[in-house]
Image (tube, rainbow, N blue to C red; front, top):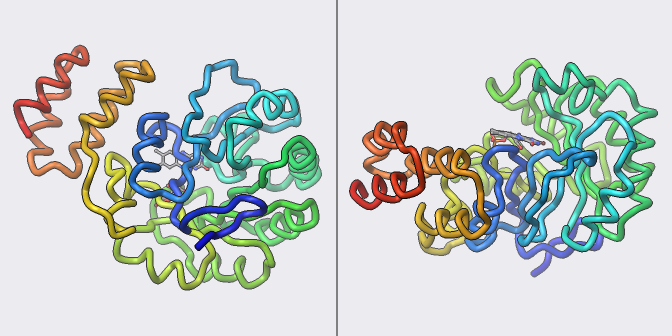
Amino acid sequence: MGYNIGNLKLKNRILLAPMLEPNDIAFRLLCKREGCGLTYTGMTSPLSKKKLNLEDKPALQLFGNSVKGIKNFMIKYEHSVSLWDFNLGCPSKLSKLSKHGAFMVEDLAKIEDILKIMKANTKHPVTIKIRKSKKAIEIVQLAERVGIDAVCIHARTVSQGYSGKVDYNFALKIKKESSLPIIFSGDVNENNIQNILLDFDFVMVGRSCIGNPNFFAIFLGGKDRVNFFDYLELAEKYELPFKQLKYQAMNFTKKNKNGKRLRKLLIGAKNVVDIRGIWDNNT
Ligand SMILES: Cc1cc2nc3c(=O)[nH]c(=O)nc-3n(C[C@H](O)[C@H](O)[C@H](O)COP(=O)(O)O)c2cc1C
């Protein structure tokens, strides 16, 4: 069975939420291997010159406060992505300072300009990711008007950041008032995912799968198949920086019975050999 966002057919309705730090290419590939319907990159500036690894054909999330660079960036990566997303939900201090993410929701004219440019430069679906705000319904209506293919709602306000209760009723209201497919984001876990899928078209999994790509396999009925060494192998193949490897090594300890000990030892790791040795000797 296929599930559609615009002209993109997905094999299931469980997506990897965009997350800047955790979603490196190695991690995304493992999530995909474990069955995830679509992986997202973290927020990416169209002005960035950083080399991108997009072997998993992800949804690429853009952010920014102007149309500058969007067209050229999209032309460059059009063949490497499955979908384009635009971030209207980032609550960070940096977003506040440069008025992007959740801090541009008052500027509907600018959002419209950006979304129109995005739609005009791709054959892939274009989606947006928003938070709970007074402007949310207006933005969804704008999205419908300019031909956006789906909306992701993380039903927390900017001031909530990533904590506090997700306003499920607010997300339901967005679903009720829109004809677009709605992707639900916020505290999705193994216990609530099935119920959320009754109310929404797609769900995004964020923190529940950090360091745990098996989340997707577990839920989709597969076996626990990948571990930190699979991550390490891919991370080395894609030459990810040591800092990232150490960060993910810490993340993967979450699901390990010796997690506490591993984390303590990993603090002192100076190179990949140290990390490998610590995992080898303690798991
Ligand atoms: C470490 C981290 C990085 C994130 N980076 C992004 C990002 O780049 N773009 C975005 O739209 N949301 C980002 N988010 C928000 C998630 O996509 C998601 O909406 C939020 O964490 C709620 O879902 P969860 O409770 O399943 O984690 C990030 C969240 C975390 C925890």
